[in-house]
Length: 268
Image (cartoon, rainbow, N blue to C red; front, top):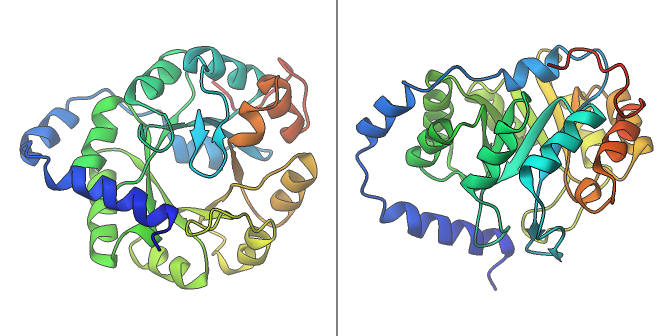
């Protein structure tokens, strides 16, 4: 029986297989883009827990979350609440996202933006740079080691920061072997889409101190955020609880322990 991840990756690989655009030409275009905003730096330089706030319309497991969201307006609310960075889903078929969502959110504020998608080809990496992303996601569970290393190198050469996502210690070893300096521990099982709220806490001690650490998924509120910060995480990536909160700015502010529009250090 195919899992969520199997179906998503199969579809993305089908699309990659028929992409005949010359990669060299795309890379040349990518090299002409304006400088990125420093996604990893925004997390590392924060003197409190950083929040990566996600623009997310729906999920395969829960369906519609905020189907009619305005990415520009939501980005502004996240910024007002003190978010350090944005994450924007660009997968259309399974998550309802788009390149337009990413560009709308990024153009609405000065925060660095992660392209949140299932990267399966070099074209995907280059497209992230061309569409205006400041960082790209590479999922260890979705790639073999060779592809992971090649995509990490390509993204870095193009000026993108790379969030390498892991789920366990074995995947962490692979991430570190390809030179990852920004590692996300996803508490959501990509096979079942169930969340293990203790996974990031267990994994924290295994991640070297010189790595910028991000806890992804399953952050339910301030108590979870505080526990993850105490465990050594620089940031949390939060989507569903923010887009369904009714007041995204206040929800972000609550996670970092400040007030909307208050003193937010190291935010442009």
